[in-house]
Image 1: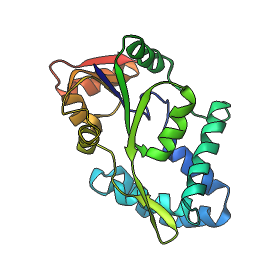
Image 2: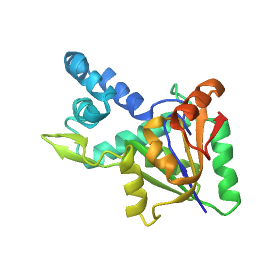
Image 3: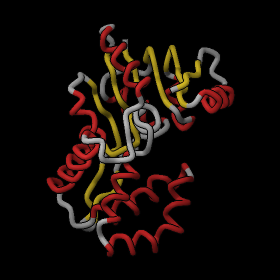
Image 4: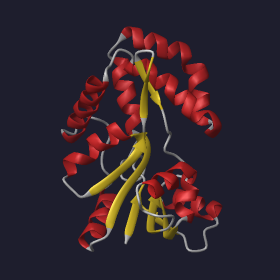
Length: 216
């Protein structure tokens, strides 16, 4: 059986991409100034689903300008090392990791599908030393920086799973976000996770007859 997990807010208790970008921007006065100048435009774009990819790309480009592919990967590895050392305000959710391990113990295949850049998500997942497939947002180089190429969110998560050979249906799906409704609808057992009341409210809005809310 296939168990599909979202990453940020589901297995992690925060937004890994936002924190990685923030740390990069915070260390450079020039990046900080550029971010502050574009923030009034870029942040509302990130919030709106239709412009999310463009808004995220603006912030991503500022944070990564000047990095070649090797330096980009090293930045993600360094971030993951700080995460492992518990030196960041970001942690694995205990119930989420326990659920993931239960699936692995039962012989299920586990895929993490996330809107975070694949290079960042893979850097965070690899040290777990578990057989987990990672699917995320691909990046491309533009004018000396990096921007989102194929943004792995909403329906695109389902397409990524299909392209990776996992078909159009899966046994389980776990996410904290209703942006993942296509992912939930493709699961035999869709799970909306989060604090108890919030998860139940999202479940009610999702109108999934076979859905469950889980307090993580």
